[in-house]
Image (cartoon, rainbow, N blue to C red):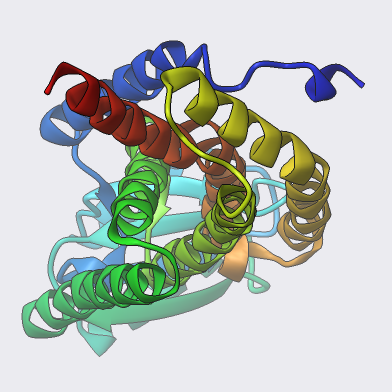
Length: 298
């Protein structure tokens, strides 16, 4: 097969350039457009209206404004595009909700179903803080574990790859204006776990091969890592394909409540597989090669 002779290591500068370009795009997107935060992370009310038929967002907006309600945004959801999601920047009252439901039923029929969820500013800030702490604690735990089991260089390489994966998932959500909610955080933590697992598989093979190798030259390092990646490549690809099939099934049949979770998971799985092969191990190679060059020049 092609991968048995493919030189994964010598092209690493192009992997770094590609990933660097994506990271820059992501940072620009976050600075200019930000994230499409759901009601879980911003104060206000989210009203989901199951219209049961095709509709125009302008008609929904007009119906809400008719009773003095002004949604900040209106989006379309559902497999048949028959659900409207109205985001209100402030908390709506029970009377406003009842009036809105009455107006929607008058416009689209009595079968219209509505669901409302509200988060106040304090809860929104606490959720955002907890989400950040979850990712930070996971990163710290990974550094400690990988350092103990392998070495510090492996741990730093793994963390850089994880940050790369998480940032690129966030980038995709920012660019395509996909709503960020609590299931998104669960997806990010799942991605972190998957990515570090894939990194450890390759790192473990590198460690095993190190027992029977002497790294005296740059070529020795490249040959060692190429050998390690080639021997785990099929396993890595088979693993990601298996999980992707499951994630795609969740996306198709799981319903709207976990759709954002599965979108983040699918994106993260792809970038996680890419980073474990083309980023984490390549960072370690660059680090080891710089050490060898310093010893020779000393």
